[in-house]
Length: 416
Image (cartoon, rainbow, N blue to C red; front, side):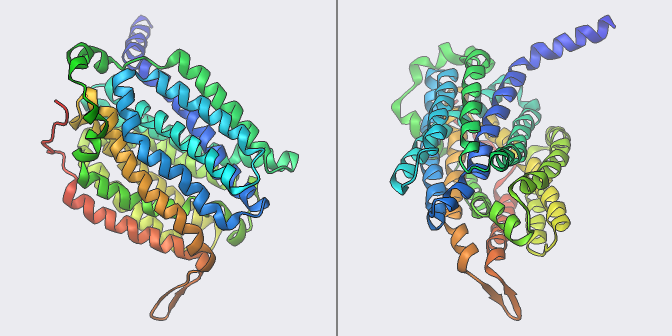
């Protein structure tokens, strides 16, 4: 018994920062899941701005994408806690503001502020995770953060949709999100380290080396991975604005029903997530990225062929498993090649490319969904399915790029 207790204490001592960051991340992802996936599309439709939904989502993603690398660099320089707490407080305010927004200009302004907030939170948090564990455990650590993303995707629509349905209001879920963001900020204030363990060890050596050019170092450091990220998240971005509307229209689900569909998919994917992280650390990060992207591409083609709820759910499960194989290993690779003093900037650069791809995808997704049919020979893809076809093509291209660019033997050492 004593040995078990000593072992538990040793593990807690080693991983307590990761545990704290996971709590913060799950709260933040849940908050953004409520806003971006659940609350926004039905609300925008209810006030007659559905044609502008792509632009509204794109505004958030554009600002977030542009600022991710510079915000990550500010976290490298001034510490992690202020960026995470400040970002959560900004999003708390914008969620409340959305309940009063009725015109496009005001909504776009709020979405831009939300983008600033998200850019402050996520590169900073991921860089902190990267510096809190040893390189040989980084894929596993990143898989923990990926699990929080899954939790947000799963529980956000369920909670937001349930609240809206319960009170018959399209704004109730924004109030819920505001409360969640406030809780995120409070928890982050107490649990976020000012610097990660690795940051602290090197801070006194690196302080004098910081230059304003470091704000853009990430954008110059990993162009190959940025191209891959752009292509992959263009495919994902196509679906973000329309996935809920698609399931309600084509599968006949209610808002709560959409959440109920997503939840078991996410639970199964989350259960595999930690195994995926250990696999990445065991058999190599590059192999995990490639296998994961292969599975996501195959699964997206499966969604194109889905016409029943159970088919959609099975393809979604496989898609999620592919994602949790690829993404933590990808983030771990980037953390491995970046020095602590520029890790936030480099992680942010990957996020910038992801965001730009997602922006363009989110802008085009509703347009494809509303009016674009795809004809290949005798095959006719109706508009509601066309975003999924283009997404499947994008993920296939990304897989090819991964075979070319992603290597465990990457010799780059950025900022050392």
